[in-house]
Length: 69
Image (cartoon, rainbow, N blue to C red; front, side, top):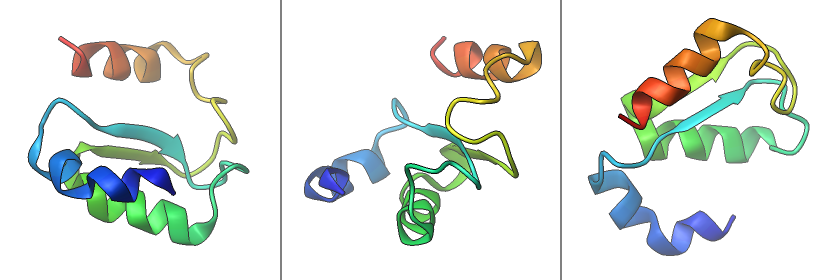
């Protein structure tokens, strides 16, 4: 995963976060664990939804939009 090259910056900056799903088919379990560790409380991981499957829900979309404010 190419994020490792900027790991320290991503860990220290509150400008970045991640929103994904446990069953996102483009992420391995190791990559998901890495993202959880990298972003900590800035990681929003839903139990299911596949790849981008949760964006149809208003609450999930609002969470993402609010993060960028």
